[in-house]
Amino acid sequence: MTASDELKDLKYHMLQALSGPPDKVKVNENSSILISGCRFRSCDEKGFIWIDPINANQIFVVISYFFRNKEYRQDGYVVIYSDKFKTTSEMPENFKESLASWLHLHDFTSPQTEVIQ
Image (cartoon, rainbow, N blue to C red; front, side, top):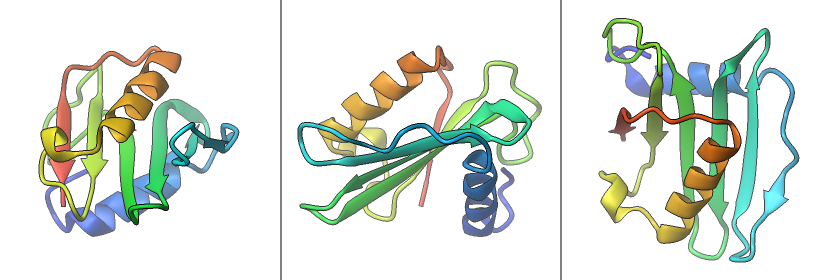
């Protein structure tokens, strides 16, 4: 992802990150819907969509190895998009727990998280 037109880049990267084998769609105990998958022929790149239908929230996550024209990062970036939340501390606990579980499931431990709006 690059800084130029981040929403366009987000759409492109999200579609790419979900272009390969999908994971099963899940509904957690809080009724949140979890959708995820990996990029076709590059399954290290992944996408995660968290939807809270009760509070009308949705947050999109892409695991990317390039972000904002920065150098390739071997342990990747967790890029989070939300139109409601500017920082991870503002995001719902249910999202943070779901994301942490998803990242753990895929053995992804990058310390680098970026939030865009």
